[in-house]
Amino acid sequence: MARTRPEVVVITGASGGVGRAAAVAFARRGAHIGLLARGRGGLEGARREVEEAGGRGLVVSADVAEFDQVDAAAAAVEREFGPIDVWVNSAMATVFAPVDCMEPSEYRRVTEVTYLGFVHGTLAALRRMKPRDRGTIIQVGSALAYRSIPLQSAYCAAKAAVRGFTDSLRSELIHDRSQVHLTMVQMPGLNTPQFEWGKSRMPRRSRPVAPVYQPEVAAEAIVWSAHHRRRELWVAPSTVQAILVNRLAPAFADRYAAQVAYSGQQTDEPADPGQPDNLWEPVDTTGDFGAHGPFDDEARGRSLHLWANLHRGWLALSAAAIAGLACGAWVVRGEGRS
Image 1 (cartoon, helix red, strand yellow):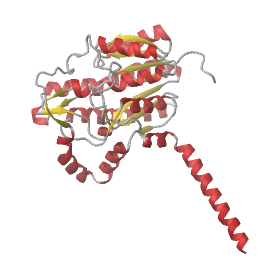
Image 2 (image 1 turned 180 degrees about the horizontal axis):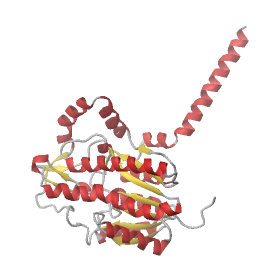
Image 3 (image 1 turned 135 degrees about the vertical axis):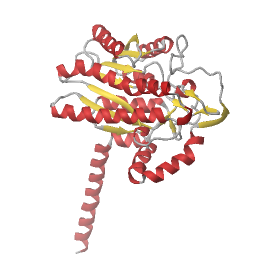
Image 4 (image 1 turned 30 degrees about the vertical axis):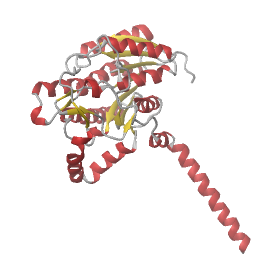
């Protein structure tokens, strides 16, 4: 059935990084998008990019750690644009530090944003989608939801919690025969501004674990997942490697992470002790960080693995057709010799 109105999408963490790139990608399809985050400067920048890309944007300042704010934002989006079709949970917070250098309040805050923020977004979406028996909820995950690494214990734990929550809810939706679709997109290391505004106690500047991909790769996976009923999507070879190695050889993965993840999450440049962070307050109250972080020179703009993953049905048919032709040619050649 042809769509008679623009798609309505809500994205948390829309002011920068993955959420920002996803907003622009949905806008290219003409979507109307509720843009949720705390920082007004980043949200206004996102709105401008959305409208330049052909969509419409509604800026809603909200802290995902507070359910009432998220639910009120959902209501505002539906008043402005109509029923929500897609909800993308993307907001996150992290701290780069060893466990014994972390404060209990920092664990609480990362959990409130990166785990409970997803719970709150999901609850707000379900309140509206379940009675209509339609809609898609996308959880922006990470390979770290399966394979934790040192120096980001709070973030890894929160992502693992999101995966546990999502699996429980998915089974409940199946039990209820609900047509609301729930999916999780597991990301690799991405070139986002979190490495400019994430709190860190490390001696050198933080960075994503290589190989690094541009946020537009993540956005492509999110938009595709919004329109296909895939249970989970692994975006890059590094995602697959981290998840599978952890399943098959977890002790080896522990030792490997211990050896490489300290240097792999820091550049050679000394950290700036005065750098602001967004753990408690947004850093983009007036300015705009955009979607990209400082690693454009090394970040990959495409993932061949993602392309193959999104087209695996077509590739399987092509492989079967080639095999059939090869088999037919072999039979004809054999008959010609008889």
